[in-house]
Length: 110
Image (cartoon, rainbow, N blue to C red; front, side, top):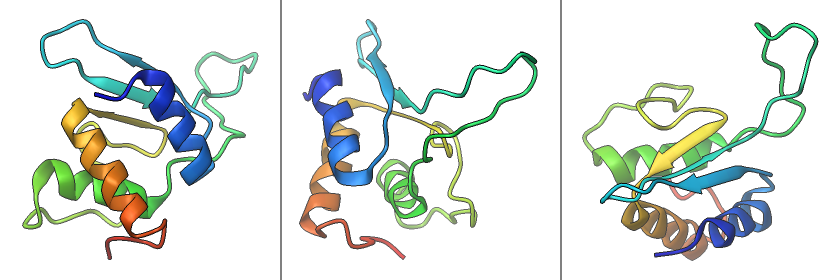
């Protein structure tokens, strides 16, 4: 299992995404990473100046979680995979990272 810091570093180096993250203390040890939003005077408005997780990466996460038969929405957001937040178990993170690296960052899924 990769540590939170290892995954944060990987996200920055391979995707250009600056994320914060944590690993839950539960049995499955969910690992969640998110892009922090900007601090604005109005707490009801979210604004992001940092880049979101790339669509191709989110699609790869969804295919890893749900399989190839899952129909992916054009925005590639579902369940624990969103534009600014992704949560998966360690084995899924390792699969996604290895697949992305083997494709050398070149859109591994259509």
